Image (cartoon, rainbow, N blue to C red):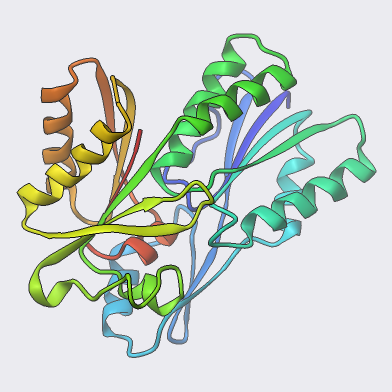
Length: 278
């Protein structure tokens, strides 16, 4: 196999045997524990069941990132591998992938493996997968793909619209003073991925029109001029479609995809949450 793109399961991009000629795509699953039940975050996971368990369980759930061995198995299958992980600021997945990279290169020094710390999650990783495919299909060599993807990632932004920060607060992903329990008052939290890859609560608002305005406001602040946008939603296709329509009203040269969140992003975004990357 010539090329492989490997992500952890924080990436919501649909799994499949290939993304193009000589490009294989695979996701390494997290494990999500709710009460006494473990969910393997692969294509078999039933997100609605997991969310129901989360909402009925008094205990906080937990997650386990992929082991170095899981990454290593996939790294050994291709001559050239681009790996993309959830932010190292919120998970050990990046460190695990880096450990696997070193182990494989010790045994196979001719292989080329690069691990990108996305400093984000969800739809941002999907953007990076698509960009990596584009660069590979342009005929760039390994170093060219790495440089192009690094430059692309440096210009992307991620904004979250969450109906609840309960899980993020319980797991220390946002502070209790800056986070809040939104569901009781119909309040939404608007968060962003910081430059360091942590989650920062930017503002709070009430009502779907204001939620959409906040998302579009973040795009305007970063001088979005069109191009690729991916919206990942947790059981909230209606809102995702509304956001897409508003984006296209403002930027007719935007290309907007909608994806459903997998297990890990559903665990943290919770029901109704959105992750928008551009």
